[in-house]
Image (cartoon, rainbow, N blue to C red; front, side):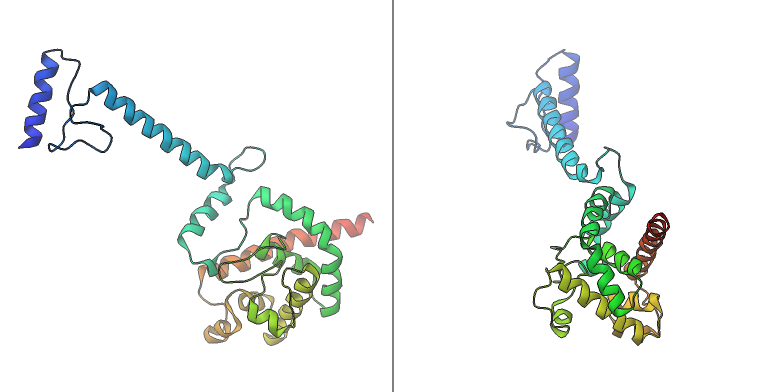
Length: 244
């Protein structure tokens, strides 16, 4: 066999202390060789270069998964993997990590008056509205999903048209329409916030079809995440009210 011939040839050169060992595999040079008779030291040098390039590329891919303190965010790693494996409709449009949350907090203060106005108008807990916005877009008014959902509350084009929204990137129009739509879902499901959130994420038809929360991992995770944010905003707003 050709492999046996290669091994014998390599063994004979090693015994003869020949430093220019030829690397041949099945009479065809490997992908890393540049000619048929490549010295072993040159072969190893080329291989090391390719490994170095691969490491650099890997670091460039992983670097966004580190927060602004230089510490790895485990949730970001999880989300990075999930976003590569799940359909777009099952994932949030903006990564949920520490860095995006800081940016979201800045935008949150800017849009806080609009949230309060819309929440009061439609009688929805403002902390819950904030939680939905954070889960949907991380307070990015220009967020767009592959499915076409736009803006802070990720309105689908048909939903925006039904609500009379011409520009989903307008924060005020988007928030008022999103809260109005969520209130409609709350009324539709007898005030059950979990079912309303499931309908906001997966569609009210799916909730009616399964007579409850659809058995979608992404929808269940979405509801859990919204309530985690809701708890945070509820405590934050209570603390602000007590200190005022």
